[in-house]
Image 1 (cartoon, rainbow over the protein chains, first blue to last red):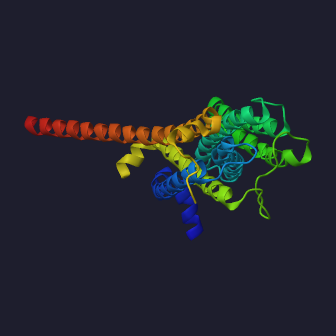
Image 2: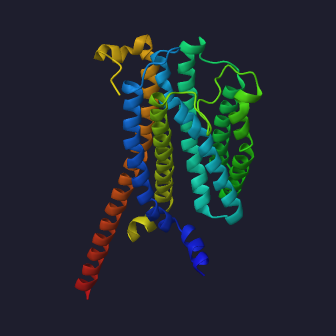
Image 3: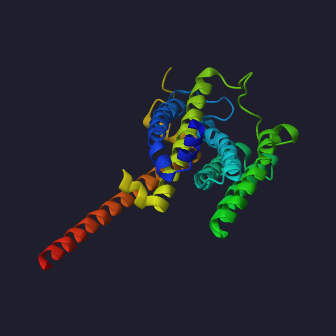
Length: 241
Length: 72
């Protein structure tokens, strides 16, 4: 009975709109504090890299954004699965908004990587497996947005974009292992569960920045879901509050 | 733990890589700032316009009620 009640609640736009307030505040403020500490530590306190000089400080934003590109895509795939299983319109809204935020994060990851490549590789772009697979991921995000917004009727649009989101999950292991399987100019992972290639004075601010961008991205998705719900159900939402 | 730069100019120049480092920070932090500001301001605007609509609606209904009372 309780599960049935929860299922009904989670499908209600008004319930979801109100429930998103607390996570947005917690994730947003925690992410902001971590970002301020992480960026200050990375830019000012962390020692200079012996090979790349101060150019390496780009890592404190490039790596967190690049990591979030795949995490948000996985989340979007999960929203796609939950829409196909439940046909809940809220899952469709979450799918679209995670695609929009994911596309933005992916774009920042690609551009910041290109800027970093100029002083380190001597070129802003190479047709390298890692770069190509991340570019494909950007096209997948844009494809999901395009399908969602252009197809009619709405149910068909959400279904098609959900299927594309789920199919695109196959690209995630390609992104992750592209630097291992193929001969790549892109460096291998800076850190893994077992070991890290950096000393703690450089590594700790990177961890802070990764968590900061993760929390802020989730807050951003939640905030955009709220806006979408308010645009569609504003009358009911604002009159009930 | 110590600050790695002797002067503010050193910090800005980033050992000659300032243009690359600062453009990445400007892009990423700008994305976050706009990303948060746009939905927050849009939600505020929507809320305000809905409140205005509600207050106009209640004023109109009060006026029509008083007209009906007068006609009776």
